Amino acid sequence: MIRQPIQLRTRIVISVLSILAMFVAYEAIAMRQSRINPKQTVVPGITSLWDGIQKMTTPNRRGETWLVEDVKATYGRLFLGLGLGIGLSIIIGVAMGAYPWVEAFFVPAVSFFAKIPPTAMLAVYFVLFGTKTEMFVAMVGLSVFFTLAQSIYQVAKKDVSDHSVFKAYSLGATSPEVIYEVLWKQILPRVIESIRLQIGPAMVFLIAAEYVVGDVGIGYRIRIQSRILNMNVVYIYLVMLGGSGLLMDWSLTQLRRKLCPWFGE
Amino acid sequence: MTYALEIKDVSHWFGTNKVLNNLNLQIAHGQIVAVVGPSGCGKSTLLRAIFGTHPPKAGQILADNEPVTKPCRSVGIVYQHYTLYDFLTAKENVAFGLKLDQTNLPFRLFQFPKWRQLQRQHFAQSIEFLNRVGLSHAIDKYPHEMSGGMCQRVAIAQAMIMKPKILLLDEPFGALDESTRTDLQLLLLRFYQENLEAKRAGQTAPHTILIVTHELNEALYVSDRVVGLSQYHADGANGATIVYDRPSPIFHPDDPRDFDLFLSQREELRKVVFDPESKKRHEEFVTFWNEHADLQAIAMQKA
Image 1 (spheres, rainbow over the protein chains, first blue to last red):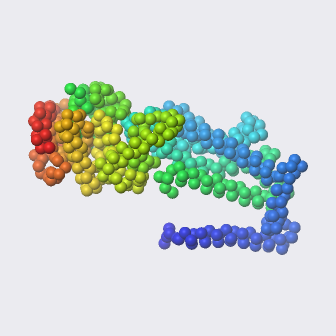
Image 2: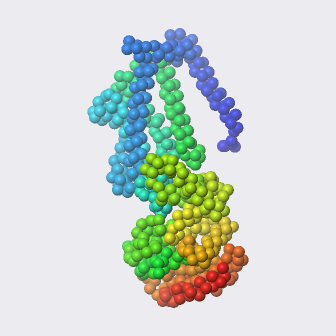
């Protein structure tokens, strides 16, 4: 029967088996490729991947390793961009959901820009912000802002009934209190969920931008190393991106559970 | 005399559609008034006007002599679908109004120890109210963990703790099963007994309630006064008005729940308020204040 529940232990065993299967399949393909061409680097084996890790962690002439340099650059840009985008979209999105005149003012612009793929806007960001950190931060921030502001606005408008708002006034609330104590607290779990969904796209835009114009960062390193077929470095970076994405996702889920125990799963 | 609620010459219309036609109503402190009427007669419009979210186009509404132009502390409300705050437990939901009314955000942030102390008092009061509505076992439950009846009790406690001048109940038991509905009706009868006790002690009656319901038995059972709003009267083309305003029988919570006791009044109400053929002058059955003195005497005697 579909959706037949399974025991937690069975679930864990299946998940572990799936990870093992991925490793075994990868290693089998790597061994097969190496038998065909012992010098191949497209599907490097475990030993070759270890070489890649050593390359990434060997200090260069400036005394910095690729790993530290790239992680600092990429995640610095990501968190700064996300911080600005999220902060701005919360303020504007909540205001749009609370005040019809703010809604009327922002809806056309937000709806329009949310439909333009941020990577298509890269040229505009280059012209406006150059190719340094500001450009990456602006791109991540604005790409997150338009989509997130729209989703927060929708949630603030639909998840908080007029009755809840009117009742708060009848209980003695002022307008700022209604916004913070009713509207914000009601939509908080959905805001966290929306942020969670925005991290993936933000990473895509950032890595794409670094790939095109970066001189440091994970996207830049993937481009340079893939050109010379150093896939043992590229794959390690990809694993790192996947791992960090999962970690951020998990952290936000935990945050939602902690802050909004009433929301359930 | 100061009324808990006074509606003066209130009319309301949407475009060319006239809904309320020159309404006048005075509700004294301690009355439990049921409003009944056919579908589409403007009960909800009237309720929204009294609550202050949709002020009337003409006339005035006063709660304890203060004009009502927007939702305010004087007028509390319980909606049919509870409208509890999902992110608060039963105890927090009931104490929510005390928090909003007695503190502000800077106080809660910058005088945290004092706020915690006050919050403990609020929770104590909240638990006391939850006990009164029979929910002592559910104080830490979130709304999604409670049944509809439990949520409605919390909503009543949430409104009552604020001691509004008048509490509006908008078809509060409409979505509940028969047994829960009966329990909550008895709760209203207990509130009425508390009013009588307060009056006997020379105090102001604590609960003034206006309940909108489409259930005639419920209207006659829980209230001490029934008001019928209807478009079926001589000037009905200009909107609905009050066509019936009479005392209803007083029940004690321990009395048998016998609806046959008000059979004749129910028929009278049905004929005057719900019959589309009724084209009488609307004042004919608006006799509450004439009968009021007698009603009080009977109530005190019975209590």
